[in-house]
Length: 433
Image 1 (cartoon, rainbow, N blue to C red):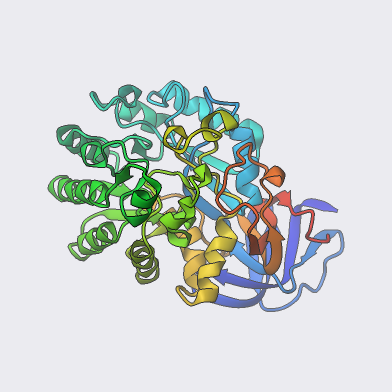
Image 2: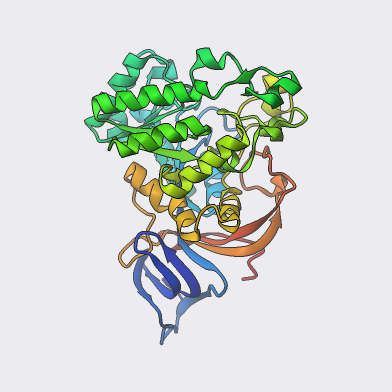
């Protein structure tokens, strides 16, 4: 049987790039899509045939925001385990954040990430580089060298760029490479050490809160710097109604601004902190229902370009402590799909829009390959059973991370197969194949 050729038959193909939505046969040869047809293949002798009846055939998902922790914090995650988690969630590509130890602020470490990803041979891993040396917010990192080595964006994610002059220079310099600048928007003075959203819940729990304006003010500042420089600005993990309004206005002005939202920010509110649950501690914090509603509108109307996971694994050392001392971040690669499909069932977005937000949207935002299922394209695909129910058990995650506020939830929607370059890199044990 040919290992470089296969047919996917009887599946419902959705391709947001072309608008195709229907049962199709996808013929993959040597890692690329040879043909897409409404007919079943006439001759399959010696060729692998995968019956996708009742399943969705989708472009592989692309995560613009994942923390893979390597180098330096391999006890939390490695590029290998992160890539395993990615393909288990249907993600064929992830952008690795640079807040490692040491930070990825030079070409050598960019190449290190690419080498580790090649060794893993699973999801495509695109490195990002730091905006500032050591992510200290003082001097620009060697952006040109990192781009030449393979960095697809620059970001100090995990930390805001507090110095507006440095942010301006970053946008100007990155513009020469047509490179997006991803920003973590948090005014540290306004946040004032808050460990959750400022509001009724933080008051009830007696925890210091971070107000919406800590995010909103930085978003507005950087949009104006984007207008000044003509650079490309990408706003990470939008969480407030004010930020959504600001991005919507920036797009109306024709600025080169893109944005992402995470499943936890469009699914949960600050009520999830409940009894000081560190699984619900992240930055930006979970906000109010009004903010969640605004994010949902932004996802539906095109204000928000991508769903990103902000996958951020931690160990018990960082999470099994008092809420104020606990690290920010949760794992998200393996729960993103069903949480997104829940929006479809609620009527918040269409199924095609959900697929676009997970694939074509992020590809376009960063100018990455993928996000399409069309003849001649690389066969990066996710085969999804949209009705399969499963209980979230972190012990079964491919990630080393175990902290998720969705532990114990029953979710609908499971990735059965993930293909990268036509090769099957993940197959669910529950798929029945």
